[in-house]
Image (tube, rainbow, N blue to C red):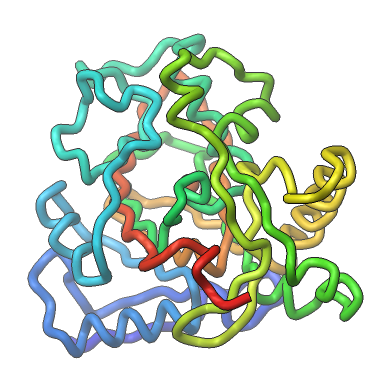
Amino acid sequence: MTLSIRPIDPISRPFFAGEVSGIDITRPLTADVVRAIDKGMDEFAVLVFHDQRFTDETQIAFSANFGELEQATGDLNWGQQRRIASPLINDISNLNNDNSVMARDDRKRLFSLGNRLWHSDSSFKAVPAKYSLLSARSIPAAGGNTEFADMRAAWDDLDAETQALCAPLICEHSQLYSRGMLGFDDFTPEDVQRFQPVLQRLVRTHPSTGRKSLFLASHAGAIQGWLMPEARALLRDLVEHATQRKYVYAHVWRQWDLVIWDNRATMHRARPFDSAQARDMHRTTVASERSTMAEAA
Ligand SMILES: [Fe+2]
């Protein structure tokens, strides 16, 4: 069989999110196949693969085809005993180290609810994420979808005046802002130190396609040189614009799905599910090559 990609019907945009078939990506891949996946990512920004029975080792090996992998330092429990051995795997689950389901009021669970807000992975790191690769190891009976919004289409549809306003702006991103939106402030002094804001351009140009996109996230909490309420109001307006249903693909997970998304061109958010059920997702993250501040304005 050979790899093929078909567009997944979105609500109105014809070419956002693709479903890939004809390939087992848990095995070593040829350079041609890796190039075909990269090309698919440039076109669709989100690719869905079904029935990929990854281990952490094979997921890391597959992910490394696309660049250098990030360490999972955005975890609240970074530096402590973790459930998953490899520091290259982000633990996107509601599970304790003994694989039991976290208590509803668990601090790590409440922190992770920040994933329900629209965001781009690791925008709170000086060098943010390129691709995220999320493997569904176990899923709840219902709910827990992941929604993706196309930041390229959102940029294209802004009027010229708003594009000109946004183009030069530089935002401050921190997990302190995104969690603060949910009223979560249970941070240790070490967390506060680790989550100091970083600077990111609001408008990015994709290095492969040349397409512009809005680089938004709930982690963005300030704009350099702007009064805070004006900055927050603009960011809120832009997120509202960019997450209209016509820009959104909602992924309904099956066990052993692997979804890759380009954080430079999309935002995403998790949807609620029954907190008494296990949801175990393992994420590898390919880092961008440079800070957005080093990209052309
Ligand atoms: Fe995320």
